[in-house]
Length: 272
Image 1 (spheres, rainbow, N blue to C red):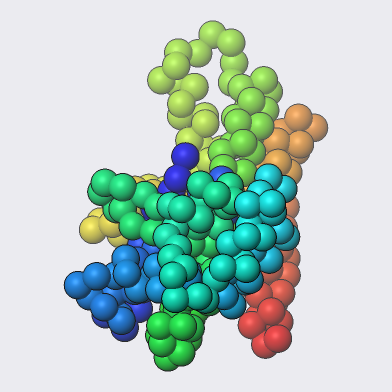
Image 2 (cartoon, rainbow, N blue to C red):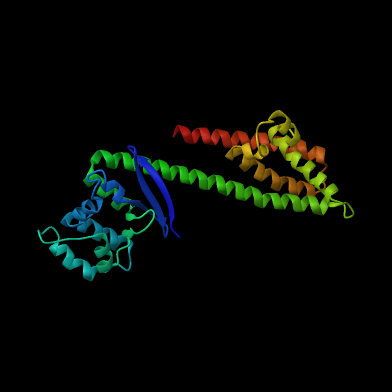
């Protein structure tokens, strides 16, 4: 399934899309820089040039195992002549290309794989290409940051279950009510909160009455990594029968050590 997005380049909205793991950029939007009234004609004029078809053909040969090279050869020999015409739809039909496709309806237009889109942007405007590349790279960096954040949250959820299972098996008596059991779970969660943040969930809420959610919703990625590790360690300590007070002291030392390592590593990466 295609995932849509947008970037803004010099006050121009450029649609982007990820399809089958490939990043595509709407070159129809880029073409409006050259001809706002008929952007399709700009794309067609670019595609009828011989050096454009050479580039497109080479990209397909390198990235598309089903590319129809037999259908491509006569097109290349005709390209550049006064009578030669080419459109994205015709290109796909004759060569089974995947680097360019046309989408109808909402969010429609001609989309090109990002390297092809950059090549087209260069033909339209060297300055616009530079801004497009910079903004697209910023978008990808943001996506990677979001992916990293999501992965850390999912890891935290997995370790949370390991942690609560250890509490259930070793700290919750069989005859207590669910309400009573929840108190024990909350107490153990606060062991991690105090070890990591120096306060319980209740103390955080009292100190931040205007904030929604809980203390972990406002944690940094490094803090979430550390918490994830601590949940695993606390589960092991619970299984070993270590008392809560001793676990708290041990987990606090681990939190300090791991946060120092994570923060120092992050600073070193920033200096590179």
